[in-house]
Every structure is written in C-alpha cells, then in structure tokens.
Length: 388
Image (cartoon, rainbow, N blue to C red; front, side, top):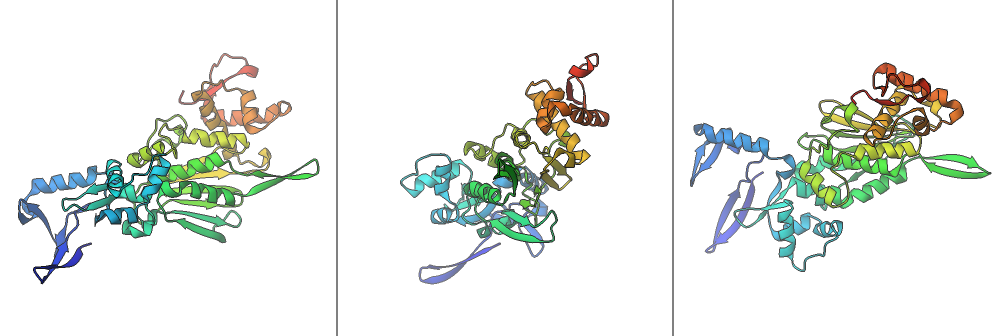
C-alpha cells in the first residue's frame, strides 16, 4: 500500500509518494513490474537475472521476518509494540531511554532500520509483541480465537474471545482463560463433593504453544483456534505436521517458525527440545485419560484431548493410541514396558490385568508395538514401539 505525504519545501507544497519495499511480490504499476537499477527505474523483465534473484529472496525470507508495517518512527515502534513486556518476559531492566529500547528491538529482529532512518516492524515483532494485532493489516487473522460450545458439537457456541495482543504478551492470559473454561468433573468421597479438572494445565499450555510455533503463517484467511467442548478440547492451526504423526513422541524438534520459537524459549514459554508432546502425554497420564490425538493434512494440524469417566467408555481407537504413545514415551525414557506399567497408565488394578492384556493385544495386532524379546515368558513380556 503506497503512502502519500504532503510536505512544505521553501513554502511550496510537495506531494511525496512512498512505495514500500516489495515483500512477497515485485512492485508493479499499470500491470508492469519495475526495479531500480542504480538511480534509474527500469522494467523488471529487461533484467531476468535480477528477477530470478528477487524471487529467490522472497522464497528464502521466513514469513516471520518479513515486513508487517514499514516506515514507522521510533515513537510509532513503542506505540505499536509492547516493548515493556519484552523486558518483563526476559527479566531484564527497562532501559532509561527510547534509543536503548530500539537497540534491543533491532537485535531481536522485531524491527529493522530503513535507509531513510525510519523502521520496519517484522511479522515476528508484531506477532509476539503487538499491543493490538488489528493494527497490522495482514496479521489480524493470526490472533488466537477461543470458542466454548455446549455439548460436543459446534451448533451451540456459548462464548468466543479473540486475543488480539502479541502471543508473548498474552500467552499466560490465554492459558488462564482456557483453564477457567475447562469443564470440571464431580466425585463424592466420604459425603463430600470433590471437583476434578477434566484436562491437565500442562497439556493446555503445550497446545497453545504448539499453535504459535507450528502454524504456517503465510496461509491467508486462517489462524490458530482453541475449541472447548463438554468432554473434549481441540486446537487447530493452518499448516501440515512436519513429522510423521506416529513419531511425534521421539522426533527431533521441528519448529516451523524458528525465530519466534527461539524467543519464546528464552522467555520460558516453550521449549525447542521436541518434548512438548511428551509433557502433554504426562499430563493425560496423571488423570488416566486418553493420550492426545493428532490429525494432520496438507494445510492443517488438529490436536484433540478426550475425557472419559471410565475406561470401559473409551473407544478402541483411544485405547490403542494411548497404549502405543505410552509405550513410545516409556521407551524414549528407557523405562521397560510391561503389563504392570501400562496398568498404571490406564488406571487399572492388578485384579483386572486382563483388561490391559487385551489392549496390548489390540495394539500388537495393529502393528504399533511389538515384543522386545520373542523368547521371553508370556507373563513378563516387555514391549517396544514398532520403529524401535
């Protein structure tokens, strides 16, 4: 979008037309693309080598480091970005002057200096520290939406909230808000009514951080969303999963938005060790509910958490997935996997060990786990993931 400015020079009015630097496509006028060669404006098609280099530059610049808004002053930077939150998150003292703040914003690649002395705010800076994402035209849809429904369908929405501040600024508020909406289960013990959380806080936190660092930011018209139902929670964001869904426990870390993930790690919001899904499984194991389910396609990732009152209510798919992912978790942590430890995972006592034996058989038959030693005694058999 061009910027028109009216200034006075020697008491004469001068109109200045500023054309922002190209970010995802070359600048065109009247359908013709131009490029500056030295001090001259020339048609881009006359310089094929420069055109190829230009397209390569668009492809190699990560979306998070592209320009969200350009030609802003130092005052504009501090008006658009919550710079104070940066120092709070990193537990650093706030500089005594604006120039110190600008220096840190430049170091973090939240902003870049332009030739005219003004600044560009990068998508990274806006997405992490924006006071209001609506101030950035192309990032409005990247705000995290939280929707609560009545029942387990989407026909009756109870409430919806859009968090329009930067992810780093509002991360804790988003998690706290979701946790207030998470349903509670009730249990009567010794005549007293005791309420239990249906989903673990650590799993909610990991779901939100995954929304941020794994979303494909250049997909237009789609953004991260958390949906809360009576007995399940779903987190969805644009962009396919970067690893095999069956290897999500033991995979090496992959963050689609590496620069943002690096800052969020320094701020203590997420990690880059690839252990987020492990902690989600830990939380679900503590409550004896199914392991998280991950669905993916070419343009989406969806993570689901399910809650059941009793193991007998679980679907076969939930039983098998939980047995497999629990086996993966124990295996990568070098814990031998047998009937006893899986009974603990499912919340089954020793007298009902046959229930877990049946679940193990279902998982072996599908081919997700296998015997660690074919010659071992049946009662003491140990199991490992199919890929081990």
